[in-house]
Image (cartoon, rainbow, N blue to C red; front, side):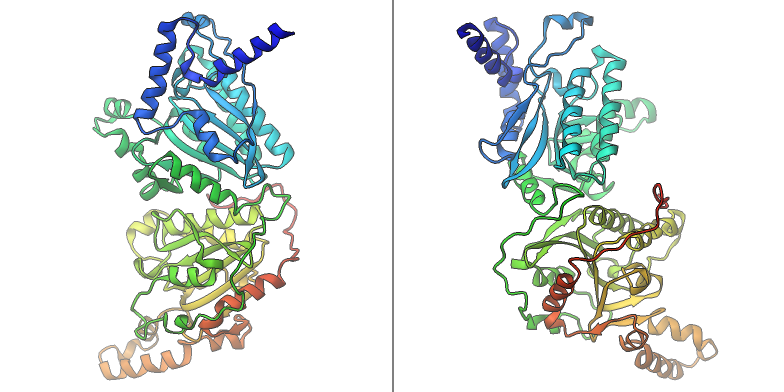
Amino acid sequence: MKDILQELEHRRETARLGGGQRGQHRQQAVAGQRRIDSQHAKGKLTARERIELLLDEGSFEEFDMFVAHRCTDFGMEKDRPSGDGVVTGWGTVNGRMVYVFSQDFTVFGGSLSETHAQKICKIMDMAIQNGAPVIGLNDSGGARIQEGVASLAGYADVFQRNIMASGVVPQISVIMGPCAGGAVYSPAMTDFIFMVRDSSYMFVTGPDVVKTVTNEIVTAEELGGAGTHTKKSSVADGAFENDVEALTEVRRLVDFLPLSNREKPPVRPFFDDPDRIEDSLDTLIPDNANTPYDMKELILKVADEGDFYEIQADFAKNIITGFIRLEGQTVGVVANQPMVLAGCLDIDSSRKAARFVRFCDAFEIPILTLVDVPGFLPGTGQEYGGVIKHGAKLLFAYGEATVPKVTVITRKAYGGAYDVMASKHLRGDFNYAWPTAEIAVMGAKGATEIIHRADLGDADKIATHTKDYEARFANPFVAAERGFIDEVIQPRGTRRRVARAFASLRNKKLTNPWKKHDNIPL
């Protein structure tokens, strides 16, 4: 018995070393330690250090610590490190259960083998079964070439779990090193992707292949770094300065989310009066209708303690998405940003908001929509890029959503964009407007030039017609008379009215017609 226990402890110590264990010989041990030192020198933590930071202290329960690969080609049978390059298990984040896997770059560059994939699949199966989020800490050079097609089969097995888990449990990917080839598609199917600046990248084909095939010369950072994926491609939802910040922010995000689609989001203690009056909001909207203002100010003043967790902050800045709490309960926020492109909807903002709305709907997170939108962005670039279809995604997402939906129109709500932004006609539950709201087919100037085309040569007449149009339509009352706006509210009381609206909707039940799945215009 004593021998077995000694063997157990020895094996555990060896497994915990990860890449630091490379056999019994001193030379190999030194080589292993060098790999760990190299990881630290790059500003990166080891796989186990990352788990320790992510999870509550002492909560991690590891699975498959002793699993080793079974490959016998290319001399691989001589090097079979315990754990096979990935640490898997479960633990808690602020006392709530999560499953986690952390790839170990010090073991075969974190490459995915058949057994490596099996370890990940096991915890994903358990997450679906037990209703808990999956957090993947990715740091991998891709498929393990020595294993050939078995490695590719492993990837596909993981992909299938990602698909099955989608909309069932939250899936969060943190890219903490290289992520190339097939390895990028698993994170791509998860709900949130975060990257670390200067040390992580994602691409299907690397710079060398790009140069060979297309003659383009590009660095790894330019091709697939955090800046590229947060600002240009929208693949990543956020980027952080280092491993520690990334893991801290992931903990914060998990605290907003439910454990699964079978549970409500967590309710946290709050110390902010739901009836708080914000007098400053009365002057948020400038006198000049063409002057921008910062919609984030409204979000922060409505939220409990001014706490706002923004998603995709660096992409499509003309729309804002993220999470707040109202009376301690998670609420998803979608808001037009007049500071960028005057708050117009375009291809990128429609895609960004649609995905966010669908996530909220999948996990029973109520949605607050703050509207100041002059319409869809015109131009050949938008039309050629398919703004019709992309705009329809947001329309579809809002219309399909069955969660509580509260909308506040602060200023402009013109044309089709009024419909798209969670209007009453898309089953909005509470639709409020500020006195400054303008709900119309289009702006006064454009409308006047169409209606009174015959008077275009007379500036005085056009000015008179414009003023008349503004008096008749540049207000919330026409829509309110038809019941499309439930109430015209004072800006200062927005937090109170919105909080009360969501409180009244906590037991909302709404179901869509039976279908296998929808066919959203992708």
